Image (cartoon, rainbow, N blue to C red; front, side, top):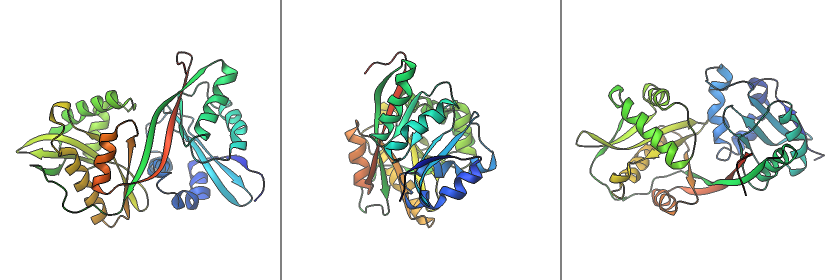
Length: 286
């Protein structure tokens, strides 16, 4: 197949024209960048410049991708390890700092350490996540009181508070909560579990690929947990996605949270691959 080399995309159009077939063949693993494609291609996004899009190429084949939409972390796929020094050198010509690297191990760890070592920075493992896919919602799930509904303008303040709590609880940074809540409601992405007119749980359509939707922002206030609201909400949202003709739904779980992993397995989600965060900074210690 030949030696792998790094190719930096001159534009999002160049990147997706070259990598779309590869990404589509690994849709679950690369659902994040596929979900970002419409905004990157149209320019309708609020990311900082420069946006980084690159791929590893061997012969005529794409072997993996790396991307960053600042201010967020760098994401890498199953890149050949021999390309890590070339990738880190190119990143160094682009950014002064990178907060973290997310991707499969050992690639993510290798990139993080190669970036940190010459800069005198420390690295440490962050969240371990598992990507799941669902193609059918299991029947006969327990049904708590309530019903799924879309978010409305009257829910924006509540959704914003829950997004802020979600970010704090999970450690996953997000955009400004009020703006994110407005966007989720205005685009029809927000879903709430409603019991007698009161919203008790939240989820959202967080990103679309050609054949799937990613389910995200699943949150129930602590005092309302253990009643099956989130399970029912994710199940109904997943069923909604499939009823639209999508082939599957994706979601991420924290491997340190066995409760959520068990809940999603009961709905019908199956593991696809694991990814890890490696945090970089002067103030982190292994």
